Image (cartoon, rainbow, N blue to C red):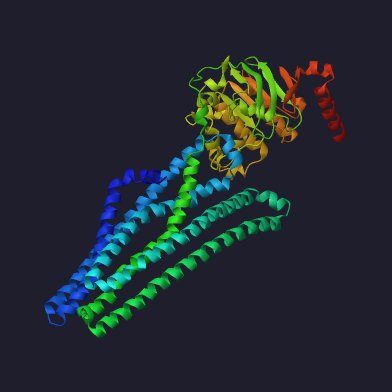
Length: 579
């Protein structure tokens, strides 16, 4: 993992080296004050060397100006480097998320993913910038400081040196507590993001059911969990900082007492100037130790965030299931052979599904909810993958597992009941079907989807902003936009998954008319609850409990008096009762 972390410095190697050089010089300059102080007290002032006093003071001002400029460089360019590394990680994470299978998103909530993209990467970038810089400055200053203090007075230097193993023991002990607390903090932060994402996305439902109090209670539960975890973190930090600070303060007292005794008894030829210089210089040794101590929280935050980042990068990608054949021409013959499928080990969703659909024909899937109709649709573009004993799906006589995922999906159009539109304009969303489409193709697609009249009635026309997920549009308008982008994509294989089930009759008529145009000349699979919309399908399959229990034409299935006939009669009986 450490090697992986270091790899992100590679593009910014020159900037990193300059940052380290600047940090090193800052550390050297930090030793200038106690050194000049010693000369002031032991030589220049006692000998009344005014020239050297002035030169020494001016020299300090000069090197502090240099240090100020170097600190600007470190702060500005160091943070720029950190931000660029963060951008590289975010780009890599985003590209990874695009390659993960549907199953990953079934098991990971959006808020958790967003937490990885924002909070974790920020903490990592801060560690990437401040980590090496703090280690270099603190390390050099500690080593240089103790060497200088030993040179001034080896007795006091050895006493001060005794603080190091004690402080590092305390650091190591509390680091374990920090690590556990920071991991819990990450989980709690992700839960808050999930809760917020759900509450904001579902605000209309919340208001419709007047359940703002319930949402507040759910949020407060996550918020309190986060507060409790952070309280644990700050408790560990409080104990850590107070104990470590007490140790350094105690050693300051010891230095003062021992130094005073050495001076009082004249031991080791200890003079007042050396004593004063040593007291002034103690901070040269103690400050970087405190800097290392304060760096601990950042280290734990960054390292725990990087662990989660790497964990996502190590997730299994869809490319594992990628075939090698490019599907550049599709006739549209589709066949399921002994297909068995389960989303997890809890039980099969599909059980020995078999059917063959000739090119240009339409297959309608009907049956109770949860029977497996949508699962059949998801397997065709390989949103989910069959295992070794899961049977096979053939397109034009070739197992779909042999095709590249991109080329397979490029030839399949999907219109679902739950339409997802991106924030932006109507034009942006229709163009999603074919980003390089001409204006003529765009207008034709809108006309075929019965969308053009609606667009022309809007003040901003194609440039109308539809809001987040199409919040400013009706269900029928959103559905027609999704159909328009399928017209642009122009796929030879079409899947309509309950595309009109949530619409009123007038809107359904418009949508159904557009779908009839869209389905012409294409191999088409329709999932429908309203049986009136699929009476003219070439084949109708009744799916129950993961099995196809009946297949045939509308007329044949009614004659058979089987499950389809029961569904049909029940639906029309309910329709008559509503009238």
